[in-house]
Length: 303
Image (cartoon, rainbow, N blue to C red; front, side, top):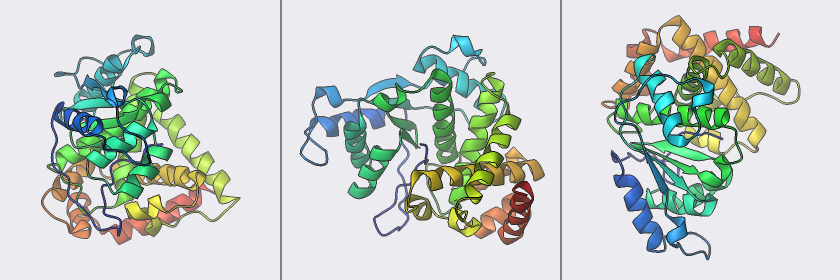
């Protein structure tokens, strides 16, 4: 449901992202849509323009469950937790709500995604978070409850924050940490808003991974390193389990070190593509060492 931002060329080569602020990205995408940017035979019309919901200029206080009745209040609630309680950077930008998967696909094309990749994402995902914007399929979100939509926004806004920390760059980093941190942030946000505890999220992840391990071989840690590996998994169940593995890895890493160390990792990405050195500098240990620790930790959880 929530892959994060993975702007890559078809051959898997990394492509840097341009910083985008406020409503600029949505206006650009809307103009591209109106110009007819689309796959297949459909042509963009005025109904394909994204509906814009700006991020609040200053996040308020966390709202109880009953106070979240729209995207503006959901954004305010999520950002109040990420900024005031978790210490993530203040975000400027917009939620761009596209009417359906076809218009979302066109918007992703306008953002520079590879055509095949844009189609895959629009067909299978609810949205994508990138520099200064969350692009979402509103038709898909309407099928979700407000707690589920809030969780979606928290995950994608975490990706926006990752870009903000890295100066707008995607950089060369471990995909499991990108997705794991977004899942961890979403869990903490839902806990703070009263939608469910972080410990419940952790237990659910363990149960899901344990159940999957009885039916098929789990992805190894090295399969969680690249965005391409996630994209090429054969089915949705495998991808969902990878999110749970990544969440458990991030939860272990942050518990061992700190959230501040994880945020420092993304700051380092802004200036260096040496992901192993960035990991070592941010967390004070080699990634290979943590990989061994997590593999043993996961084995114990699945006993």
